[in-house]
Each structure stands twice: as structure tokens, then as C-alpha cells.
Length: 430
Image 1: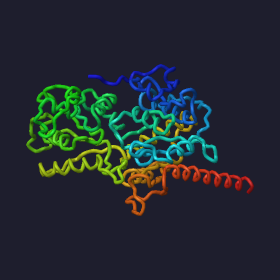
Image 2: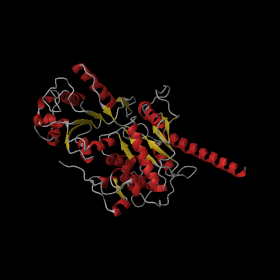
Image 3: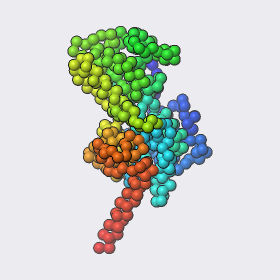
Image 4: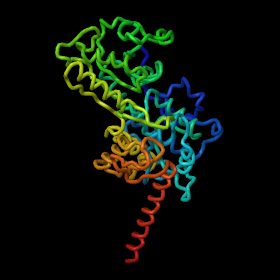
């Protein structure tokens, strides 16, 4: 069974950031040091976005895999990027809609990379509940869409925290996404034995009476006798493409004896735990109205379990608005600030730009109440939130689009800086 190799790279590899085009990135080993994905027009020389992308990529590698935070260089390199504040962006409905960039998104990225009236460069990361693809694949896609250099280290996906559970469970069921992509993501995270619904249907075609595997699905699915295997946990990595079939299989496991298909627990309390990469009930697509998402699947599954067994099903969700996602983002930005500015604290303010009040704004506001720094929520009108409605969770600011959000944050920081300078000058005079 293929698994990711997390051997520590050499010192030279840790200090060198590879620049790859989106085309060349396919099939590359991303565990051997930092990587930045580059649009073709920037291949010949680093662009304005390179410094932020590369430095956050290095911080992510230090944070997750290779070195302890105490091993960061004591003398930070020269940098032109501010450490006082940063931006964190949702993607769907903020930067991208229906696979295409929102018109103001490209200009917003330019503003962050120094093309603003103050000439300041601002660090930024992407925090998305979207899943079903590796961070590397999401990075390649966004680099092409926004025409900027982007690194995998800048991405925090809904299922990113699941990598920390790879050593806890052996055989797991992974649900959702296109084809075999979620299996590949899970194996890349280090899960040792990954099962898909297709594997189970291949073993017993009567598992889902109304779903038959295509020839491609049959060939990709891995044959085994599930009467002899126990599935220890269920992970919904991405939106299901077959609600009926996937829920039937999950329900079978939840009512089984210790995750063994074909068995039934007497009290329906021996099944494996279920984890969802996020809990968004609706999300923004190219359709003029919002579409249902993974949170709706979670609600449906819990309702079905209750209807069939008479018991409540307890499931776990990652992603926004869960606090763990924001804590990881804070650790990443703190590592970046330590590397680049020698300050072992996160930026004083993080502006989170989102389109969904129930996840983006709620999560930002709730984390702000417990965080050591300030998380400032900004709601845009280009996604789930509809003008004229009152958000269930109120943002600190509401703007038309991501470009206005960036301008708002930069201007707010400039005014804060001016007030600080004036206060210092007054103190010196007196």
C-alpha cells in the first residue's frame, strides 16, 4: 500500500525553494523541500508574489515536518513584507466562483504584493473548507486562475488537520470527491490502508442496489474480502458524488460490530467514528443560487441514523468554523513571522475575508475572543451572503468584493500606524 515518505531533507533542500510551473508540478515529490508554483509568464524570474509564497512555504515545512520551531535562524533575512498584519482568505465565493476568478481577485493579489498606494507588501494565506484535492493540486489550480506565484504552504484545507490522525487508525474508509483523488490525498497524509466505497461495492455489488460501478471505477477499485477486515474510522474528505450509495455504506458501518461489514451491533454503538472535513450546509458555485454541501450530508446521515436506530449519532467536523483550523493558521503565521522578522508571535492583526457568515465570520469572531492577537472578520457580497439579508453572525466589516476588503485592511493599518506615530511624537514633545 503506497504511503507518503516524510524523510527529512538535507539542509540545502530546506534552504532552497524550487520554482515549478503548474504543468511541471504534476507528479513531483513535494516532501523534498519547499516548492512554489509559478504561472508560465513568471518562470524566467521571481514575481512580486514570490517572497510571501516562498517564506510561508518554508515556515509550513518547519511547522509540520522537518524542524522544530527552535531551530529557526536567529538572524532573519532582509524582507520588504510587513509583519504587523496579514490576510487569510476563503477561496470559493471570495476569490473564485464556478472555477473562474472573481473579477477583482487578481487586482486584490497585486495590492497585497506591493501595488498599493503605500507600497507595502502583506503576507497572506488561504483557508478553505473545499477538499478532495491535495494542497499541492489546489495550489497549482489557484496559481493558474489568479496568475500569481503560490505555494502549497499557503493552503489550509478542511481536511488538512486529518493528516494528524493518520497514525491513529489503520484501515479507514474515505468518502467523496472525484474518482480516486481522495484516496490519494489520504495516502499522501500517511494513512496506511485506505478504502473507498468503490472497493466495497466491487467486493459485493448488492451493497448499493441502485449504483453500479463504471468500467473505470471497477478497474480503480481494489479487491478484498471485507468480511475479514475491520474499518476503524470513516473520513468524508470532500462532497459526496453519490449520496445514496455513500450513506448506505456509512450507515452499514455505523451499525456494524467494530466496523466489520455484514455484521450488526445489538445496540448500534460499536461502529467506527465519522469525521467530516467541514460543516458548510451551503456554498457558492457558478449557479445563481447557493448549492448544498457537506454539512447537509452530515445532517442527513445523522437524521437517517436516528430514524433507523432511534439513537443520536455523534460525528466530528473539521474546517471552519472549528477553532482548530484557526489555531493552525495562527501557528503557521507565527512561524513565518519568527523566520522573517525574528519575532515569535503571530502578526498583531489577521484580516479574514469570507463569504459565509455561518463558517467564515462565525469562526473568525469566536476565535478572536480567545486568540492572543486580533482576528478581524470581513464579509464580501460575491458568494453565499446575499445583499439585503442580515447575517446570523455579524462581521466587523462588510464590503462588495475581495479588492475592497484588501483596501479596507491596508487603509485601516495605515491609520493605526499614523495614530501610533502621532502618539509617539506627542510623548517625545511633552
